[in-house]
Length: 379
Image 1: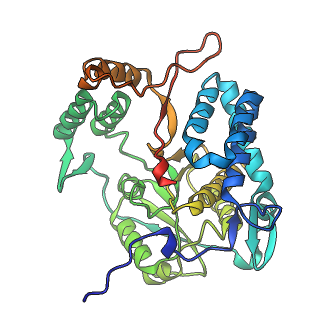
Image 2 (image 1 turned 60 degrees about the vertical axis):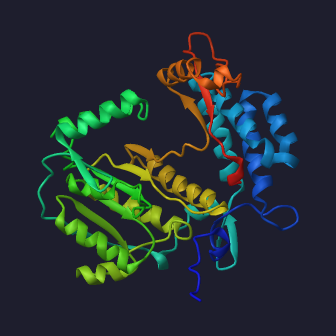
């Protein structure tokens, strides 16, 4: 019998006990549930005690109730820009004041760790310059083929007409497809946290001539692919190194740093590296890990981004959103949902619409609707 190949699972991943960690509770244990409830309750406080209290009360049945609680939190944020910022700041303050950083058995708060990067772990830099030409068109892979020029524009518009793509997304894709200027990113700097992610933009940015600072773990084979890609592109790849290196082979072998366990050193390296690059860096987060590790890596990225923003080294941030959570819908999307339900057989079968009523908003604010995209079976 053939030996089954292990699937990628939380239970097969080694436990990472160093780096960014959930806070230690009263009994010496790190509870993701207790921490999550505390953070969301703290975030809800600017919207009033009613929602914050409801979140704390739901702790014992959190796995069943968190979709409703967190959707209500999004609706509370939609009241006004001021409240949205206050809620975000309150939640982040709770995270920054409680999460810990572990190294060699020593436990400190994450902010203290970020303020004291290790000189012994300081990172070096390699620059890989490409010699390729800028692309003459935007090319998008699609079912083994490649769409470009008017074929791409027609397909994008067809997706939008069908309802599979938001109009704003279609307009953005068509604008890039129709503009050689938009596809020329020479003189622009991007930082890719989680640079090897399949959903990340690294390859396209390099093709368009951008300078890309790539942050990912040390995997020589993968880095060899990235170095080769950069050499063939019109862009420039900037790489963190464990030790000085010169040849492409040496760079691939020494490249990489772990966002989860080398957070302070990566922030320090970026603060030292970015001033020498084209100004106006956009910092994008493209990381993903299973379970509680995803919370920790997300916080590590936020710590890095926050440090760069505080130093004036970050012109903007980017983040790949997931559809399986609560978020605000564009007005056109809400209208399309109502139209679809009105003509659907589900209405004839007396199924209730799953659209939520409009959230309360301040005077003068536009109507806003939140979507509950949570899937509780995922945990």
